[in-house]
Image (cartoon, rainbow, N blue to C red; front, side, top):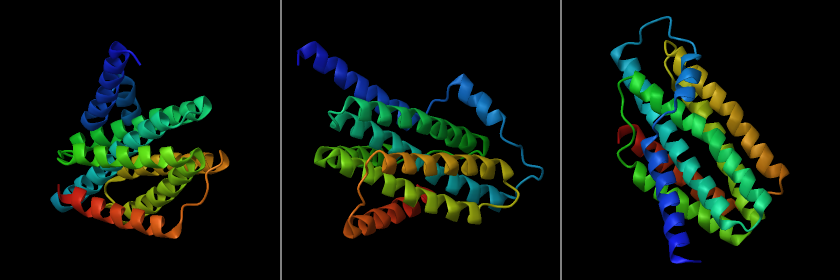
Length: 213
Protein backbone atom coordinates (compact mmCIF):
# COMPACT_ATOMS: atom_id res chain seq x y z
CA UNK A 1 0.00 0.00 0.00
CA UNK A 2 1.42 3.39 -1.00
CA UNK A 3 2.24 5.96 1.68
CA UNK A 4 -0.45 8.32 0.39
CA UNK A 5 -3.00 5.50 0.46
CA UNK A 6 -2.06 4.58 4.02
CA UNK A 7 -2.36 8.23 5.06
CA UNK A 8 -5.76 8.56 3.41
CA UNK A 9 -6.90 5.34 5.09
CA UNK A 10 -5.76 6.53 8.54
CA UNK A 11 -7.42 9.90 8.06
CA UNK A 12 -10.67 8.21 7.06
CA UNK A 13 -10.64 5.95 10.12
CA UNK A 14 -9.85 8.89 12.39
CA UNK A 15 -12.65 10.90 10.80
CA UNK A 16 -15.12 8.06 11.39
CA UNK A 17 -14.02 7.77 15.02
CA UNK A 18 -14.31 11.51 15.67
CA UNK A 19 -17.71 11.70 14.01
CA UNK A 20 -18.95 8.81 16.14
CA UNK A 21 -17.60 10.24 19.39
CA UNK A 22 -18.76 13.80 18.69
CA UNK A 23 -22.06 12.67 17.10
CA UNK A 24 -22.74 15.90 15.24
CA UNK A 25 -26.30 15.41 13.90
CA UNK A 26 -27.24 15.97 10.27
CA UNK A 27 -30.21 18.15 9.37
CA UNK A 28 -32.19 15.13 8.16
CA UNK A 29 -31.64 13.40 11.51
CA UNK A 30 -32.82 16.51 13.36
CA UNK A 31 -36.04 16.35 11.35
CA UNK A 32 -36.51 12.67 12.24
CA UNK A 33 -36.12 13.42 15.95
CA UNK A 34 -38.66 16.23 15.58
CA UNK A 35 -41.15 13.59 14.45
CA UNK A 36 -40.95 11.73 17.77
CA UNK A 37 -43.79 12.71 20.16
CA UNK A 38 -43.32 15.51 22.65
CA UNK A 39 -43.96 14.87 26.34
CA UNK A 40 -47.47 15.78 27.47
CA UNK A 41 -46.20 16.33 31.04
CA UNK A 42 -43.09 18.19 32.19
CA UNK A 43 -40.71 15.68 33.86
CA UNK A 44 -39.70 16.42 37.45
CA UNK A 45 -36.01 17.19 38.13
CA UNK A 46 -35.55 13.62 39.40
CA UNK A 47 -37.20 12.14 36.33
CA UNK A 48 -35.13 14.35 34.04
CA UNK A 49 -31.91 13.26 35.76
CA UNK A 50 -32.85 9.60 35.30
CA UNK A 51 -33.69 10.14 31.62
CA UNK A 52 -30.33 11.84 31.10
CA UNK A 53 -28.45 8.95 32.74
CA UNK A 54 -30.28 6.33 30.68
CA UNK A 55 -29.93 8.22 27.41
CA UNK A 56 -26.22 8.73 28.07
CA UNK A 57 -25.83 4.96 28.36
CA UNK A 58 -27.74 4.43 25.12
CA UNK A 59 -25.55 7.00 23.40
CA UNK A 60 -22.45 5.10 24.57
CA UNK A 61 -23.95 1.92 23.15
CA UNK A 62 -24.31 3.58 19.76
CA UNK A 63 -20.75 4.90 19.88
CA UNK A 64 -19.64 1.30 20.48
CA UNK A 65 -21.86 0.06 17.65
CA UNK A 66 -20.12 2.39 15.21
CA UNK A 67 -16.72 1.14 16.35
CA UNK A 68 -17.74 -2.52 16.13
CA UNK A 69 -19.20 -2.30 12.63
CA UNK A 70 -16.34 -0.20 11.26
CA UNK A 71 -13.79 -2.64 12.68
CA UNK A 72 -15.64 -5.71 11.43
CA UNK A 73 -15.94 -4.21 7.96
CA UNK A 74 -12.21 -3.54 8.04
CA UNK A 75 -11.39 -7.08 9.15
CA UNK A 76 -13.33 -9.10 6.60
CA UNK A 77 -12.03 -9.78 3.07
CA UNK A 78 -15.60 -10.49 1.94
CA UNK A 79 -16.84 -7.50 -0.09
CA UNK A 80 -20.50 -8.43 0.38
CA UNK A 81 -20.05 -8.66 4.15
CA UNK A 82 -18.23 -5.33 4.14
CA UNK A 83 -21.33 -3.77 2.56
CA UNK A 84 -23.49 -5.51 5.17
CA UNK A 85 -21.49 -3.97 8.03
CA UNK A 86 -21.35 -0.54 6.41
CA UNK A 87 -25.14 -0.56 5.90
CA UNK A 88 -25.72 -1.56 9.51
CA UNK A 89 -23.34 1.20 10.65
CA UNK A 90 -25.32 3.78 8.67
CA UNK A 91 -28.55 2.65 10.30
CA UNK A 92 -26.92 2.73 13.73
CA UNK A 93 -25.75 6.27 12.92
CA UNK A 94 -29.38 7.31 13.16
CA UNK A 95 -29.56 5.93 16.70
CA UNK A 96 -26.34 7.73 17.58
CA UNK A 97 -27.77 11.04 16.39
CA UNK A 98 -31.14 10.50 18.05
CA UNK A 99 -29.60 9.78 21.45
CA UNK A 100 -27.15 12.69 21.13
CA UNK A 101 -29.93 15.14 20.31
CA UNK A 102 -32.20 13.80 23.04
CA UNK A 103 -29.37 14.24 25.54
CA UNK A 104 -29.05 17.88 24.51
CA UNK A 105 -32.81 18.40 24.77
CA UNK A 106 -32.69 17.05 28.34
CA UNK A 107 -29.75 19.29 29.22
CA UNK A 108 -27.40 16.33 29.57
CA UNK A 109 -23.96 15.53 28.18
CA UNK A 110 -22.38 12.48 26.53
CA UNK A 111 -20.05 10.20 28.48
CA UNK A 112 -16.62 11.75 29.01
CA UNK A 113 -15.21 8.25 28.42
CA UNK A 114 -16.52 7.95 24.85
CA UNK A 115 -13.00 7.75 23.32
CA UNK A 116 -12.28 4.80 25.63
CA UNK A 117 -15.57 3.08 24.79
CA UNK A 118 -14.97 3.54 21.05
CA UNK A 119 -11.40 2.25 21.22
CA UNK A 120 -12.33 -0.83 23.24
CA UNK A 121 -15.24 -1.72 20.95
CA UNK A 122 -13.07 -1.24 17.87
CA UNK A 123 -10.47 -3.70 19.22
CA UNK A 124 -13.19 -6.26 20.01
CA UNK A 125 -14.76 -5.91 16.57
CA UNK A 126 -11.40 -6.23 14.85
CA UNK A 127 -10.50 -9.32 16.91
CA UNK A 128 -13.83 -11.01 16.15
CA UNK A 129 -13.49 -10.21 12.46
CA UNK A 130 -9.97 -11.59 12.30
CA UNK A 131 -11.10 -14.98 13.61
CA UNK A 132 -13.67 -15.61 10.88
CA UNK A 133 -16.73 -14.09 9.23
CA UNK A 134 -18.99 -16.58 11.04
CA UNK A 135 -17.56 -15.57 14.42
CA UNK A 136 -17.83 -11.88 13.52
CA UNK A 137 -21.50 -12.26 12.56
CA UNK A 138 -22.18 -14.36 15.65
CA UNK A 139 -20.65 -11.59 17.75
CA UNK A 140 -23.11 -9.14 16.18
CA UNK A 141 -26.05 -11.44 16.91
CA UNK A 142 -25.08 -11.82 20.57
CA UNK A 143 -24.33 -8.12 20.94
CA UNK A 144 -27.74 -7.18 19.55
CA UNK A 145 -29.43 -9.74 21.80
CA UNK A 146 -27.82 -8.15 24.83
CA UNK A 147 -28.65 -4.66 23.57
CA UNK A 148 -32.30 -5.70 23.24
CA UNK A 149 -32.31 -6.89 26.87
CA UNK A 150 -30.63 -3.67 27.96
CA UNK A 151 -33.24 -1.56 26.10
CA UNK A 152 -36.04 -3.57 27.71
CA UNK A 153 -34.57 -2.73 31.12
CA UNK A 154 -34.34 0.95 30.24
CA UNK A 155 -37.91 1.03 28.97
CA UNK A 156 -38.99 -0.28 32.39
CA UNK A 157 -36.88 2.30 34.27
CA UNK A 158 -37.67 5.30 32.07
CA UNK A 159 -40.06 7.79 33.75
CA UNK A 160 -43.63 7.54 32.51
CA UNK A 161 -43.58 11.27 31.81
CA UNK A 162 -40.75 10.95 29.26
CA UNK A 163 -42.71 9.61 26.31
CA UNK A 164 -40.31 11.22 23.82
CA UNK A 165 -37.33 9.18 25.03
CA UNK A 166 -39.52 6.09 25.20
CA UNK A 167 -40.51 6.45 21.54
CA UNK A 168 -36.84 6.75 20.54
CA UNK A 169 -35.85 3.63 22.49
CA UNK A 170 -38.73 1.61 21.06
CA UNK A 171 -37.71 2.51 17.52
CA UNK A 172 -34.09 1.63 18.32
CA UNK A 173 -35.20 -1.72 19.76
CA UNK A 174 -36.94 -2.66 16.51
CA UNK A 175 -33.80 -1.94 14.50
CA UNK A 176 -31.49 -3.82 16.90
CA UNK A 177 -33.64 -6.94 16.74
CA UNK A 178 -33.53 -6.80 12.95
CA UNK A 179 -29.75 -6.34 12.88
CA UNK A 180 -29.28 -9.37 15.10
CA UNK A 181 -31.59 -11.49 12.96
CA UNK A 182 -29.84 -10.36 9.77
CA UNK A 183 -26.43 -11.31 11.18
CA UNK A 184 -27.69 -14.74 12.22
CA UNK A 185 -29.28 -15.31 8.81
CA UNK A 186 -26.01 -14.30 7.12
CA UNK A 187 -24.22 -17.20 8.81
CA UNK A 188 -23.34 -16.07 12.33
CA UNK A 189 -22.34 -18.92 14.61
CA UNK A 190 -23.35 -19.02 18.32
CA UNK A 191 -20.94 -17.32 20.69
CA UNK A 192 -19.39 -19.68 23.29
CA UNK A 193 -20.88 -19.38 26.78
CA UNK A 194 -17.73 -17.99 28.46
CA UNK A 195 -17.59 -15.16 25.90
CA UNK A 196 -21.31 -14.45 26.38
CA UNK A 197 -20.76 -14.14 30.13
CA UNK A 198 -17.75 -11.88 29.58
CA UNK A 199 -19.78 -9.67 27.22
CA UNK A 200 -22.58 -9.45 29.78
CA UNK A 201 -20.15 -8.47 32.54
CA UNK A 202 -18.47 -5.86 30.36
CA UNK A 203 -21.86 -4.47 29.39
CA UNK A 204 -22.87 -4.07 33.04
CA UNK A 205 -19.62 -2.31 33.88
CA UNK A 206 -20.02 0.04 30.93
CA UNK A 207 -23.67 0.75 31.79
CA UNK A 208 -23.04 1.56 35.44
CA UNK A 209 -20.04 3.73 34.57
CA UNK A 210 -21.71 5.61 31.73
CA UNK A 211 -24.75 6.46 33.85
CA UNK A 212 -22.48 8.66 35.98
CA UNK A 213 -19.59 9.55 33.68
